Structure formats: structure tokens, C-alpha cells
Image (tube, rainbow, N blue to C red; front, side, top):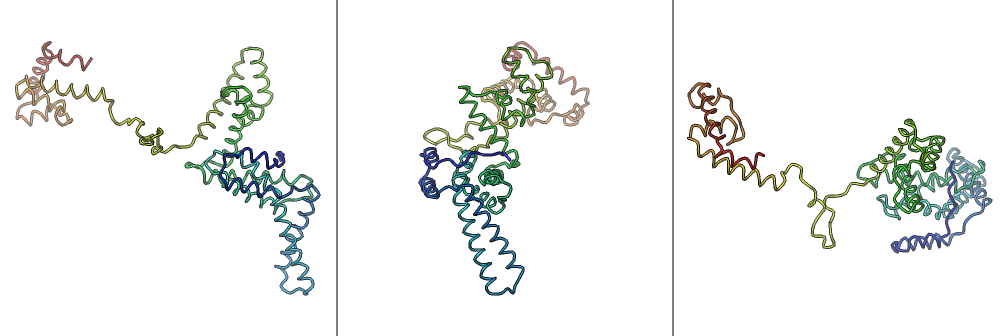
Length: 354
């Protein structure tokens, strides 16, 4: 199990959240009054918790016990409850330390702390002091899991798996650290080659070292390594895309907040203003030119090409409408088109038709 850094001093946390709301500052001051526990204190409390749990089980399985034994079990239960509360309260700062890493992920800081406290209580119940590791190491895993699950279930409009929430959190932390180290925004390749991120995006440590050495010596990568680096970088880009939050079209834009994001989104179903104006002028010119034809020629072209209602008709259909043969309609159509091709008429349409 990965070991996390112990609780940060409350003063350090308070400085991080100077701009936080009053309830946050009040909570930080309150939990700062609880002293931290030494390792032997954690073991002592864990033993009392286990003894209390055993007493509860014994009472539930034995309805009739001697009064003195019943009283002794009740005392063990009470001591276990007090130990449970003491162990949890002494580690509330650990929850704050873990929760602050998940800020800006769609949940308020107090909500993150609340979910982390639920994970802390699970850790208190399940901690096995005989394993030899510190309680904070064990509890950190439960706190992170509780917060990650909460973010996955509540914070996002589109739900993503819990393991991906952890991956996104890891990537964002790496991205911020590299930004400070490099003095610029890291590229997907920079992130993929980071020691803490490479294995997550599919690069083995040996492959990572080969690529870094080649880059340091300005050497060209062989095709296999180049392909693996490209694949890892694509994976980073994919995770970054997944991490993006949807944005409401009702989001106010500008300081006046009198316009919204949706006002600036292009409607792909609507034509461009220039195209719409050109189409309108083309229709007007076409109507003017068609008026230069005789009524029958104009009606034949309108039916054949759907110039009036958008519905084109076959020679047979037009012939039936006029009571003539399809061949006669073809002749009328050909004659009308020859007239339209005359320079005096076609010149008016050339600017619109290219």
C-alpha cells in the first residue's frame, strides 16, 4: 500500500484556505485543537475498538448472561466507542490533507471533507494494528476511495468509473507539478514521460529511460519507441479529454452577464449570412429571368427542376399535367434552356453560380 505523507500542521492548511468560507476556517480551527496520536496510542485505541466489537458480538449472541458479565461487556462497548471517536477525531486533519488534492473537481471543499470522513470511519472500523503499519497509511486509502467514489457518482454530469477519477486526479497533479518545474505548460509527451505517470499510460520504465536518453542526446528514436511514445501521448490526451466538464449553454458571458455562451455557438443547421443573402439574390434574379420566357416554358422548367415547391417532376409527369407527350415536354425544356444560356440572361447568374 502506497504510504501518504502524515497530517499537515493546521497552520499550513489554514494558509492554503485563506480565501475559504467561514465554515471551512471554523472547522479547521476546531479539528486543530485535537492532539495527534503516537503510534502506541493508535495501538491502544485499536485494541479497545476490537475489544468493544467483540463485546457487542457476544452480547448479541447471548441473550442471558450473568449481571456482572453483562455489565463488563457494556463497559467494553462504551470504551470501544470512545476509542473509535478518539482515533477518528485525531485523524480529521488527514482527511483535510487528502481532500484538498481533489478541489476543483465539481464538489465543494466541505463536501469533499464529509465524504473523506466517511472513508475515515471505515478505516477506523477495519484497522488491524497487528499488521504493523501506521493508521494514517491505512486510512489514506479509505479516504481517497470514499472521495473518488463520491466525485464519480455526484460531481460530474457524465459519470465516469472510479478508477478513471483516480487516474485523472493523478494526471492533474502531475501536470501542475511539471508546470512549476518546467516553467511552461507540459506537453502530452512531457506528462507521458514523467516517472509517476509513464506506467499509467503504458510506458515501461526501461522504455521511458531509453526515450529520455535519446532526447537528452538529441538522437532520433527508432520506429518502435517512437510509436510507443506516440501511443502514450495519445493516452494522456484521451485522459485530459475525459477530464473536461460539460459547460451549460446558459453560462453568462461578460461582466454585464446579459449574454450567454449559447448565443455564441454556431447553429450548423442555419446557412451563413453571406450564403443566405446570395441565395436570396439568386432566387430574385432567377425569377426575373424566368419571366422573360413564355408562360408554358416557365411552367415546364419550374415543374422539371422544382423551382416553385422544391419537388422536381419527370418528363412523363409534366407531360400529363400539360396533356402532351413526354417528347414534347423535352423539346419545350430544351428550347427554354437554350434561351437561358443566351449571354444576355446567363450573365446575370454568372456571379452567383461561379
